[in-house]
Each structure stands twice: as C-alpha cells, then as structure tokens.
Amino acid sequence: MNSVIFWDVDTQNDFMLASGKLYVPGAEEITQNLACLTEYARDKGIPIVASVDDHRLEDEEIALKNPDFRSTYPPHCLHGTPGQEKIPATRPRDPMEIENRPYSPGEIEERVTRHHGEIVIKKQKFDVFTNPNTDRVLAALDPSNVVVYGVALDVCDRFAVEGLLARGRKVHLVLDATRAIRPEEGGKLVQDWRSRGVGIATTSDVLEGACPA
Image 1: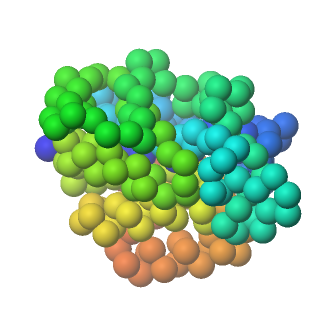
Image 2 (image 1 turned 180 degrees about the vertical axis):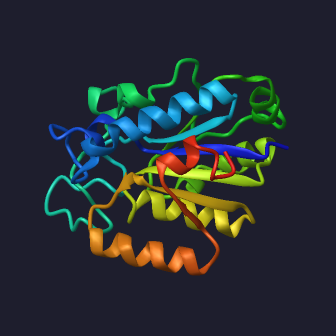
C-alpha cells in the first residue's frame, strides 16, 4: 500500500497552452505550481499517475461540426499530435503507458509494482475510469490518499475526484493547480466536495507538508 499518490489530470498542450486546440482559460497560470508538484513527488518518491486524452476523430466526444461544449468538443489531443503531448512541467521522465485495451491477468499489477516512473493512463472519454485498467492501476498502488490536480476542474477533474471517492479513497484537491472551463461550476463542485470530506489544499500546503503528501 502507498500512503499517498499524486493524480495529474490531462496536463496536455491542447488544454494547457493558449495556442492549444481546447485551451482551458487560465491554465498557463498554473504551470509553475504543476512543476513544483511534479518535482516534489519525484524528490519524495511519491508515485504519479497521469491521465491523458488520446483521441481519434471517431471518438464520441469529438464533434467536427457544432460541438455543444458539454458532451462534445472540437478535435483535441489527437493521437500522435503535438497537442496530445504533456507540457514540459509535467512531462514524464520514465512513463509506463496504460492503453485502453485488454491486458493479460496480472500484467498491469506486476508492471506497476516494479515501475519507478510515472504511470500514464490513456483515455478516450472524460472519465479516466472508462479505461477499465485504471481500476487495476489503483488497486495495485492501493493508496490511502490521492492528491488531485490538473484540468479541467469541472470536466475531467470532476470525473477523477468522483471516481476516486466512489472507490473509497481520501481525496485532496490542489485547487491552485487546477482551472475550470466554467469557473462558477468549478466553485460549486469544490463546495460540494468539501462538504463530502475532500481536502482542499494549495500547492504551498503540499510542499510544506500540510497535506498528506
């Protein structure tokens, strides 16, 4: 069991850079905090799990015409494009990539327990747990606390937090290392999560040891 892991949500060029295909407003402002969290985890030997969108044009989330910006969005984070890559602040040094495909029994669990770099989970939907291997990674690491950050707070962060809570994990959200597409919705989510026991922290809280990290 790990007492804590870090959970980096979708810190990819298309979301994080103003020139990206689906820029989350204000995302560039959190780059330094993301870098600090990444380096802190590496220095402390804390496992980092990172989700990444890995889209094809045929994915149901992708709309070539008239996206509603709720259930569908314009093409972004397309497989093999620069926009799909993670920004330098969070780019993994020794990634173990987990595809959304069947793996043999025990394969993921064995690889996770032996791997010392970041674990990168690829997904084609907002919810990282729609990749069934996410549950296997989480079970293999078996953390009591999960520190969540990244983008977007009101979309993929939301699914990550809710999924982790549903699986009995204590969640800590690093609020100043997130940004929302719709800030008012992000604020409502944070209030709800706080009332349900999610720890709301700052990057400084983590670095100074006031968070379970």
